[in-house]
Length: 360
Length: 183
Image (tube, rainbow over all chains, first blue to last red; front, top):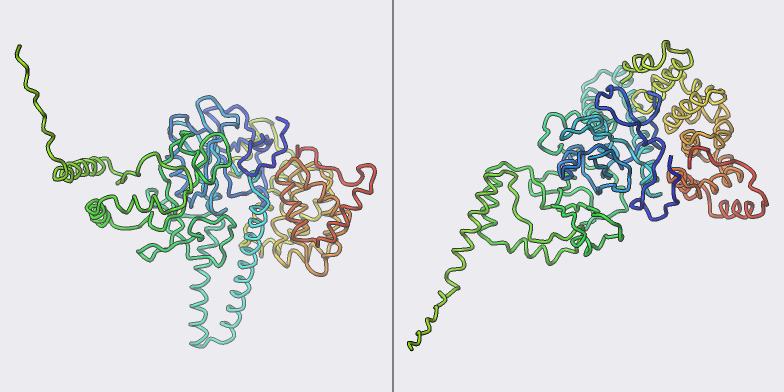
């Protein structure tokens, strides 16, 4: 086990190799039950072992970072991620650090992604609470305590309701119990998510899961540029989804980051943009985009100049990605045509001055 | 996962020893305790007492799993009170000197969970504070972070300053050593 160096540069400093992360040499025929972390098969999970920071090992080094993060984002908003180049990795694989916005998301992602095949490799996902800051740890404990007290409180209420319902079987108490039961179910749903059931995720793998109703607390000191965690889009849906902006790993693009800590390698931060993700029908999407194209790229240009820079600066204007090859081709064809059409009135045909040839 | 455990063990051994079986049961119980939905049932079974009994065992796995279980249960007010009534503070404090990092981490967390007005003075005993101060300088980030939260959120500044003074006054490093496997 490597001797760790004291690390005071925050969670993004050089990581240390910890005993409980080390795996033995991986064999393809690894039995399913192997945790891969300890010699023993048994492990007790406490709040100290869990974290909203996950480490993903075994990612095939074939340029699938974006796909990996998109997969992670299915389980909840991803706040930050970066490759862990310094961490020992097997040949032809990469290791990533992924920071989720919520512990429950990390828990679900770990459960669903660990030991799963991904682009020909097998992922090994584990919590890495070592990357937490003191504040991260503090908030983690507070959240856990709040969750437990709420569960205990609800249980007590439930018991009370049962007892009063048994004592007075009147109409009023029935309706009261019904509404309580509805509240219970809601809480149960959120409890389920807390314990990592997240069953709705598996049904719609191509969309981020529907977000839970807002919690009473926003527990992050880290402020996005809009200062909130949950945002309401035009559909009136509350979502915590954070899109993956196109990441260019080139160092030159990250030099202008305001968030840069001077670390090697690209550090990717995802910002919460209220206008980014919408759950709209495809036809509405097409109409919207067509309208935007007609307006020109003024919207994009304006936002580019006004917004404070967070995250890696894109080297070129973001292209509209319709997430469909044929649509993308269509879009670029139309755009090119538009450009040509727009440019004609402005340009005078260049008159080629023909110099009369001198005849000797 | 649990149904694979016997086959895992048989891959390495010819039989399952009693203590291994016990470890597995204990670990399972501790993991059940992580979900508050199970807490009522576990309280009925008096599992808190079982975990407390494990703390004085020789077997370090028993201790670690028992502590994990208590770490999970101790956020529940009823379990907290049961632990307090059973001299939990001293049992847990003894384990701050364990060689196992997980045990130590559980110990710090349990002490935080056990803190209420009536128990606060015992939990912020100078010896414990000095231990936490040493932990806050550890190479292990988890240990450092937990100790920092303890010192910042569960103690007054005066208490911490006093403990620091006492530590400076000591010539040799006496008291509770850092866990072996934290470095």
